[in-house]
Image 1: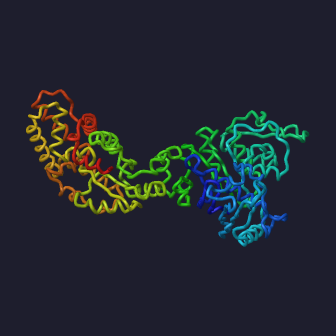
Image 2 (image 1 turned 90 degrees about the vertical axis):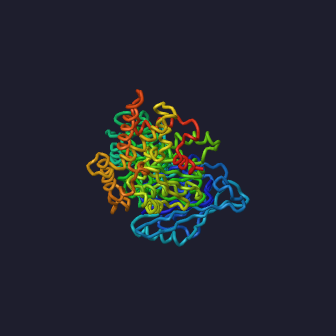
Image 3 (image 1 turned 45 degrees about the vertical axis):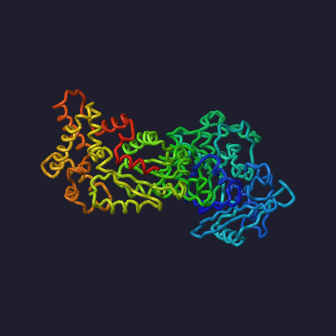
Length: 608
């Protein structure tokens, strides 16, 4: 048995919301005051209505629903009965719905309750009616037919962070204990839950051992005292135990207390008092529990990192407006946790962005981080409303683009433009258009575009504009503008040399580029690499397109050779530039808009 979907209408801050559930493990994340706890409370309200309408024989529901006293709502964080209803509801027609779609033996049951305010009487009781009475009767027949009664068919309990337990805990009857558990007050009956039976104690001890990695033995002492329960743990009063132990004991004692067809466990911050190492153990233990469905609220990154794909329910304002929350699709979890801090701190930015810029790697992201402030300053532009991130390599670019657009669906505005900037790598210039179309096909967004660097990668673009490259070489070597023709001649000669060397199979330049090509062909999943041959790339290279062969090692060779020619003529003690120091020098010495490459201006302008 499992809850497939939770439906909530006009309950507290939720106007209308469907929550699609994972069959076992659901971790709810979102900003503060967004409605995470309200989902828990909606489940509780459903259970109050459910229990109140079970006949005494526990085998059938009343045909006419029973109303529920408002005083039973005290644990739902309400002061007046109108606090239960959405702000759009008026007292004269205040009405809410809480429903669970339950799958039992592959049969779906839509069990919804409509709760309304009583007219002319405040804070007395609430009227309840079935959304569909026949659904409840069908459910009762199926459940009882399998040997359960309606009370132990569906059991719900909640565990909240606790730092301590009450000093004196009286003995209680089973119904009193279950009532405490259902209202999230299980810590008030912790001793009662643990001492149910020897078998029961042994199960709890095993759960705790699995999580805490240590033996714990419960012993009830002074049993002749029938007023208060006295319980020791490893010969020490349970009161002396730490908050981490008490939290784990509270969770698993509630879990083991009742045998049920479906045990729904609501846990708020299960990791709040646990060391990082034990959080993973706690999740492993949760997964081993049969006949249960867990709903967990957590803000802890380490805890969330242990959650599997499809187990995260992310709730935000846009999702609430759409009226539907569902588990993140496979492949999205790491993206969300890595890019949306804590409970995903960049969400506020993502909700209002105009553009999303997806880059290939760290150096590309650094380029925009360094260059955007300068570009804005020189042109007097405002800061663009853009979200920038990198895919950390392009080996599986299409999969990563699909993952990004899927994970951000429902977060970013539909009008936001997606911009992808990728290295050219070994893609021939003539084939860029078809590759672009394929890449963009994996983005779910409609407003999107992709741009190739004017070279092998961001570093190689410095050789895409000879005049600018010469200008920066003069600046680095502190040469006068009068040396422009000499340096230009050196650069053009080197370009001719490298354009020729790359065609010679025995040359180091050819071998280096071919090794990059073969490695990409082996690792990349893009369709173009299935049939692409190295010679196709080489055919498009000449001295005007030298930037397209400049891998980082080849660029370093080029800069070293240029350095040798310069120091042979000029008295210079500087070391040769490398691909990384070239970028650093560029970022640190731009003084005007005229110092920026045209191809770089084109990239920066994409964000406006």
